[in-house]
Amino acid sequence: MLKSFKDLVDVLVKDHGEDLEGFIASFQACPSHGAKAELVAKHPVFKSSQVISWNIPKSLEEAEKKLAALDFSAGNLDEWIMDLNEVLALVPHSENNLFCKTLLTRAELFNNCGMLKEAREDVKLVSLRLHLVTESEPDLRSRIEKLKVCLEGKSVDPEDGNPVNKEVFGGLHQHLKGCSAALELRYDQEKGRCMIATKDIPAGVVLVVEKPYASVLMLQKITDHCYTCKRHLMMYQLFCSKCAKVRFCSMACQKAAKTHSIECQYMGNLLNEDDITPAGHLAHEIILQTGWSVLKSLRDSIGTSGHQQAPVKDLGIRYHDVYNLANNESSWDPRLSFQACLVAVYLATLLRQSGFFQKGEDEVPMDDFIFLVSLLYNHMLNLKCNRVGLVETQYKTGAVDGPMEAFGRAVCGTLSMFNHSCAYGCCIDYIGDHLVVHTLVPFQAGQEVTINYGFNYAQDNLVYRQQRLSSLYAFECQCIACKEDWPTVANVAQTIFKCPKCSKTLSSSKCSQCGSVAMQTFQQLQDYQKIIQKARVFLRTGLEKGPKAAVLAAEYINLMYPMMHPRSVDLVMAISNLRTLTGLAANLALDVTASSTLQRWQPVVHPPPNHVTPEVAIAGETSQSQLQSR
Image (cartoon, rainbow, N blue to C red; front, side, top):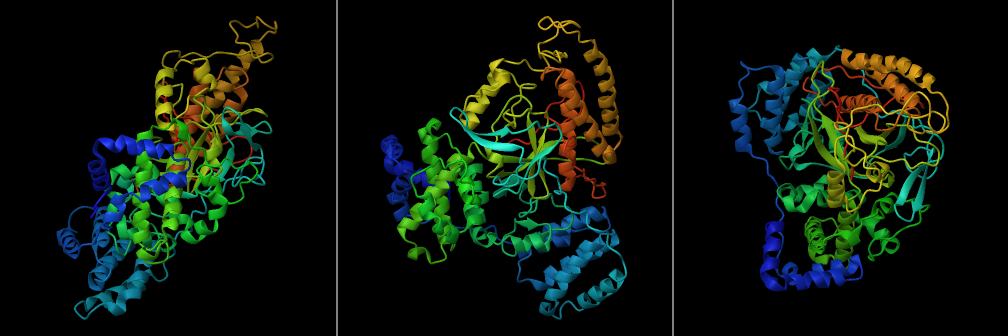
């Protein structure tokens, strides 16, 4: 019996001993992903051993203990509600008395603190199960009737609306999902797929609004975020009826989590296995979201021959978009590649035991099982360099910045086509349940539009960036910042002007190359400085001034970019302020806050200037690190 992935590795090492390297060499010699999947899946260790699926069960004893320990004479409403949430997470679904009593107590607290919508949701849930409550709780019915009367006639605040209602610059692309028509996907011999601007694009506009094909929470964040939409959970929470970990922000999200019924059977395996890796968790979610019936229907078009470079125009089916992402497999260490395939077999085994194939475990043909392993293995390879990190910042009332933390990972078909640059390009934010790409700097027609994978010239030196990018994403960066070895801003904190006519770096007011006098450039700089100074005042004034500050900061960048070298400190500081604002908007849309009463604002995005801001703090300016991708 294999209780964990670690047990599987231990048995494999014990069986092969010194010959394990030989088995890995045989694995590497296989001509396709299907052949590799077959070699590992048919290994005797999987035939002779069964993987034990286990859940993280609810505990009535633990729930009663937590409920008895609650002290409603001390603390505040927020603390009491969060304590009740911990109790509700542990109550078994069959314990109707305790569940309804705890839920009704939470509804009464919601009513007391003016959260009427949440109170009504809880009353509705209690009412649905009230007929199952035994006579040992006689006051439960009278309490719920009293609360219903209290809630009648009280008005509920209107919904905030869709925080992802953003206008994409240049209209939507005809073929690329959620992408601007101002972009074109091209194939480059050295870079592979890349996004090219077909027209001039200003800083501060939205280029992509794309819902991820699949997304997962980091294991340590699973109890503070909604499992479906990934919003940061506030006081109102709903819970999986079977496992004690998964939570939801609404009944709609709870109903939408249809695939959780499969993985719920082995949540213990997923949440306690560090070796499965983030790529493994996300690959598993891709398979769950797609479903076996769809995968089986696509079998002939996908095959098991490994990564296929589909033509750029053939991006019709969303799963094909994700399946065909580049994987840089040739640069992988053979041991890591072999481990990825082991994880794929382990996950496929859990899926087979849990009814994913829509038939009994013994009825699943080996060919189907091997096909599933090859898909999981392919996704684990391409997710190494194509996953997007979801990042949030904890904001307190009156603050414009706070500690930043990653809370999840996602994969997209369109967004994954953007390449990295260590120079500023675009940033990504998770708003609502969509990933939104904003431009941080202007792009000219014909120029490649890039994002940043988390390593930027302004804060990281060349050697560090190259080492990290090679280690994490298996490529050597050839962006302009790397080719010219731009120094970090800490080492060269100066403003470098360009001639507005020939772009030659200016050492005086007269250009040494074309002879034009650039006094007007310096005069304009003084006028433009007033714009960015006003934006910074807005930034520090309060959250309601955020949209105004974003418009001004984007305007400043669009005006100054033709006159300054991209690594000029004034420009970098402006971009840093703007990145803070896009992060602020995204996090407030996700309700990421230390205060439940924090006012929310929603930026309005227009074609030219608006939302932008990069990922470094310069000279005491506040900033938020860019959402790391891939």
